[in-house]
Image (cartoon, rainbow, N blue to C red; front, side, top):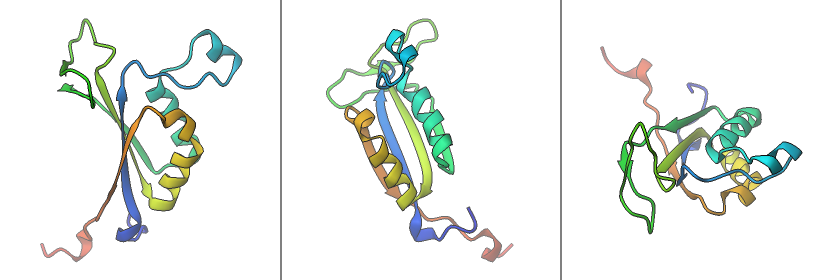
Length: 123
């Protein structure tokens, strides 16, 4: 990240339920559409997104939903997930535009970031 100017780095946080599925784009998807989180991680990697992390959510709720707790034996289909993408603004925005059809039911937040120059920090 050292070569990326601070003003250009963003974090896109995508919030959606565990039950969200990717669009059925291939033959095998017609039988069983992949989980949206898994699909977005794969296409983010292919698109060259610098960093993508699927956060474990212990407890939370999405807009209009009830509070959900993670339980190892049973997960509510409304339980929230958060996929975080980190890269330059234009790359993240291009990725979001390219996958807009799949993100119709996803809440997307883009946060501007600053990375500290650790080399300039006094010891």
